[in-house]
Amino acid sequence: MNSSAEINIEYVARLARLALTATEQAKLSQQLGDILHYVDKLKQVEVAGIEPMAHGLPVFNVWAADVVVAGLSVEEALRNAPEQRADSIVVPKVVE
Amino acid sequence: MLAAKSISASELMQAFVARTTAVEGRVHAFNSRDEVGALGLAAASDARRAAGQARGPLDGIPIGFKDVIAVEGQPLTASSKMLANFISPYDATVTTKLKAAGAIPWGRLNLDEFAMGSSTENSAFGATANPWDLTRVPGGSSGGSAAAVAAGEMPVALGSDTGGSIRQPAAFCGLVGLKPTYGLVSRYGLAAFASSLDQIGTLTRTVGDAAQLLQVVAGHDSRDSTSLSTVIPDYSAALQKKSRPWRIGVPKEFFGPGLDAEIGAAVQQALAFYRSAGAEIREVSLPLTAEYAIAVYYLIATAEASSNLARYDGIRYGHRTRVATGAISIYAQSRAEGFGEEVKRRIILGTHVLSSGYYDAYYLRAQKVRTLIRGEFMRVFQDCDVMLSPTTPTAAFKLGEKSSDPLAMYLNDIYTIGVNLAGLPGISLPCGFTAGGLPIGLQIIGQPFGEAEMLTIAHTYEQGHSWHTKYPNL
Image 1 (cartoon, rainbow over the protein chains, first blue to last red):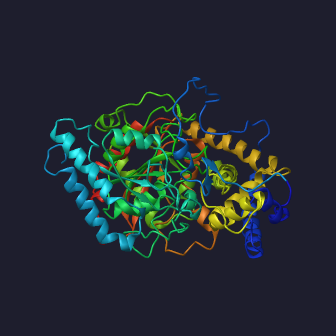
Image 2 (cartoon, chains in turn brown, cyan):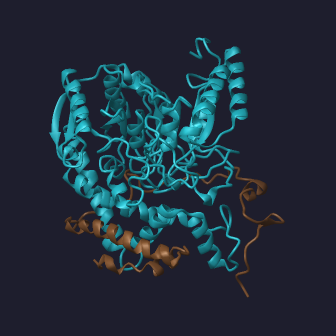
Image 3 (tube, rainbow over the protein chains, first blue to last red):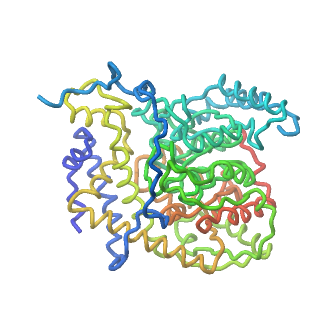
């Protein structure tokens, strides 16, 4: 396991699409360092041959009937959009 | 009372509106509420009852919603600036079921932002106070739900429990808090925090109320692929049944260092009660849970949270920054402005433990230890019907006491968190008060889909005690 000291907040923040100030980065480095140090204790547990568990139920695949059901109207779907025009959400231009 | 027509639904609703007006300034349990709408639904309930068409025991009963459970046309903020102006376009499945039963949605209740916290201090709209001592936290993350019921602003409320977020506030506020088995209650319409751990449950004054609410909200829902098809028993009828002498397991590690002496003594008295009622009390051991559950939880929960909260990008709904203009910078800046400190901390931790080079060491290892923890619980259940423990190591702490130390806050969840990892049902019920007058919670842990027996055992304790009849002086 990599050392907990190696958490690169700037890199992880970029992965998470989360802008952090220098002050936030410094504070998080220290706090997450403490937390990662704490969770390092999991290294003590013997897990060879143990299957990972995704959730508490023995359910592995669920199929739904392929039936059309009513969804939200355009008006309802756009109701919470931060900016909209002509039945569309306004977004910044991403293609030059 | 409603069925006997000794009070009308309208009178009942008016009484809760008046009580809320009187105490809400001190408690701050609500994020928002619609008095006119609630009174209108109460009048409709009275009309149904007058016409002989009452829909059952919940018809006309006001119920609060933790502000992460959708009610169509009402705000859903998750106590986050990110969703400060969000209006739910549809009902959660639990909401649909409660409305069909005639219950009246009464208010949106405060929480730690996106249910991340144990004190309700992480709300973007200000902390909630504990009605038993306004200088203390109500617990969290369903702190608004607990405080509202404890303060008499409503009879019952819904919460959600990811690592103890119903049971811990119930313990801190002297209430019954029920967290059902993972998969018993649909999560459709619940704003997701950690999808493999989240479960909707109830905060009530009595075990009987919890049984009645569970009866309505439990059951398979095709819109939640983790909801299980299982036979739903009659929970209220089960409370009256005399079953075989119970075998109650007591995990010895849950009575170790860190447990407040007054709480330990109250739980021992509860054990003595069950022993005198004919139960067999067995010491059992959950060594992996006691040692590793918190570490496993904070890796899995933050990993799932970082994934779930990726949807808040400032584009389709939620807060969008006015500062940035490029696509990527709109995401990053909207999230920076919309999320509070604890949410950012968990997103960063969760992103880190899922990132290339760390995934196996942290996330995958945590999932494997989770398997071992569930196995540990299930082995104990081969010889026990339920387990019994304190809900929390201490009573309600002071506002601000732990808010600067995230790890200390996380450690407070020690007795509740294993239940979520293993997907089990758990309930907290009042079992006494500290010398300082703060409520103490007793936790009963049930077998998967063993709610009926767990509720019956809780009800038996409640019938022999009067803690649930005490009210805070507000």
